Image 1 (cartoon, one colour):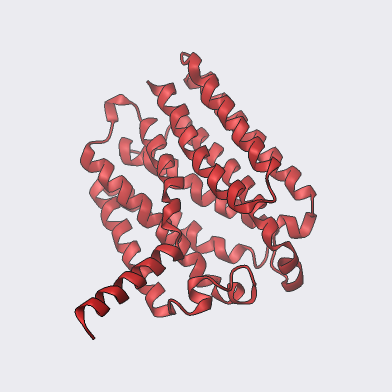
Image 2 (cartoon, helix red, strand yellow; image 1 turned 90 degrees about the horizontal axis):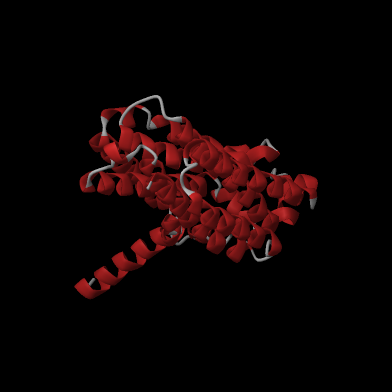
Length: 289
């Protein structure tokens, strides 16, 4: 095999790993870590080196969660026409390669957490437990969407812990985690609409499969609860920041767009939600400035 052919094969394999975890959507989760870190206060603002460790820990945690999900669900995905073209069901990656990728990201996560502070490594098992449990939830409960919300809610808590380097976490950090939990659980319900018929036929649990159109009302209620969490954070801790009406209003508009265009899953569940993360970051930045 020539050097050029070998390099091309390596590039193609890396591209498949990027596609496996949709690495471009890391922009979706990184603002959550940054927002949590900002809540720790200016006196505990992370150093540039800590920011690097936070970025590595956040990205590797996300890669680990997505790869675990794809690995655990590989047989379900292979039977679903929408997901059968993913890397594992389609055979573009094999189970050994994905297991290696999971192990690699686990090492990166552990090392970067330890470099931030020992307490980050000590508590780092909590999100790992959620990441492992969530893929199994759809096998026995329609509340599986809240597993996704719980996993992403760890991001602002992790960002705060990385900056403060101490336990317990502050009430504002928990409010931001509550916002994330409600927001992500709500949009995962929207996302699950794409598989309603398949889920009902095969016994996979989801709220849209169980409740039909009523599930969208549940999603809307969760998103209204998310806005309430922001309003509580503003009223109790950011009451000096009058300009917070701007990101709060923008957040309400983005949630409205998700529900108005819920039939377009790529737009509603991914493009809009990338913006939600950055609007949340703007909200926190204005609030703590």
